[in-house]
Amino acid sequence: MKGRVVLSHGLESGPQATKVSALAEVCAELGWDSVRPDYRDIDARHDPQAIDSRIARALAHAPAAGRVVFAGSSMGAFVSGFASIERVCAGVFLIALPIAIPDYPRAFVAADVPMALIHGWNDELCPVDAAIAFAQSRRAVLHLVDDDHRLGAHVQYCADMFRHFLASLS
Image 1: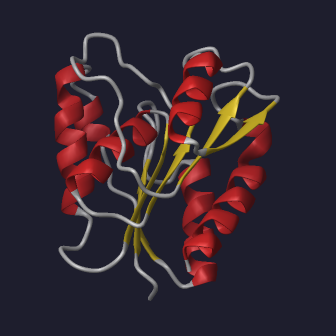
Image 2: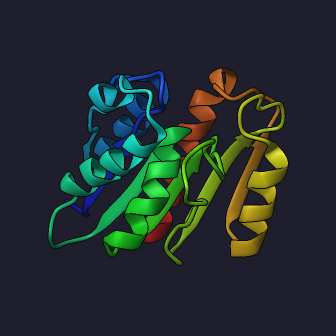
């Protein structure tokens, strides 16, 4: 195995969600181990402070040694960034990234590692301008597509870009 990818699903989703499932398939194709933590019990609290529990769970699924990539969609992307600053990682792949969460005291951060973002021009939940500004500040790869927050018309595109991202880490 080339390393482990921790795939984090969004807030109103689960480990079998379409996008993280597509990313898991890419991991298997390219020889990466992947894990999809289940955050649904944490999300049921509807408490922004529970985000810290999500971060802890993502970190618990990262091995103590070896290469790790954090990837996620929406709240899973938010969590992936925070996990990346607490565990050395090879890269971060972020889909439909919220830069801030209402009532959560910390603004988004991520490690200074290879990073790619995919965001919909018509994202009704996470303003595209915030994602652009963040990507620009990090000189991160940013893919903007004509879609909404769910990126339902671009699941295969997300998988293809993730394949390219993982290959670039080899």
